[in-house]
Length: 411
Image (cartoon, helix red, strand yellow):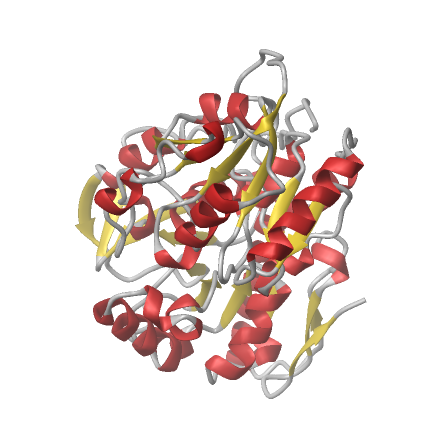
């Protein structure tokens, strides 16, 4: 990975031409995983491009000091610092401002132009993995409140495709930008060089039904492909619809196998774990992106992954796919991985494509285009406006002609 920070010159954020208000609600969780980590990472990258302000439930969060744009800082501390800020009534935003919603949003529009981040459609695609309350909230979001956003960013092509049949939101108002890594963005959090342990596998995910934990644990217990004495280390909190009691029987298994449930660990320790284990595995039933797959590959660790949803978009040496409902395919993927070992996973293509600065620039440029469109429409100016596609992921851009035409151009 690139060890050199990609710093912007001082004052670059002030040249963006508008102020971006970021919904801070995804930063409220004690442990930032998934959407919370995404929000923290994209905030740090956006801070290098555009002036940021934060809001939550009709209140503005007034930061006590300047935001440190260091991409590898402790995200939990960052989230707590932002979330604990003094609150004031939001008031009327400036004319040249935009709002960014990282998850749910209200039906009422708060800013001149607004964008929603689309992570996944889990509550609709695999509804049995969520409570009725969660399903209800997201049904309302996808069917109604999302439509109040002027545009949306999907974290994968699969997520954008799902939006095409699971929401009435116009496809041509959705841009795609693959996420950057969830840890070790500019340099390794742990600078040691641990020795690899080929018989140890790593899982990084919340223990919840969508992540398919019991399928994986049963495979690990019963597989004839794995050697005796194999270990599986599980990093992540206990989630909904999963009990500690149900996990106890997997701690010590026949043939000397062992599962270690490590809970939530600091980024530095997770960095070390990725570079210690011989392989990682991700058996999720559905994903909007798949942080653990990217993080594993960027740490030189080969991955076994489900062949579904956004996970299919990872195309690099070091990844082997399986059917997350058929244990024999996991055996086959593991055997392919072993036959290919040792494998060098090219880092340059991963670092070049999965970048937070690309995500941030996509957000800023897309919102800029919609602000200009709104202003042009208000003034009766029908001149063609175009967002430069040079920094967008895979050449994507937004082409804006007149108020009744918005098209997506992809190379």
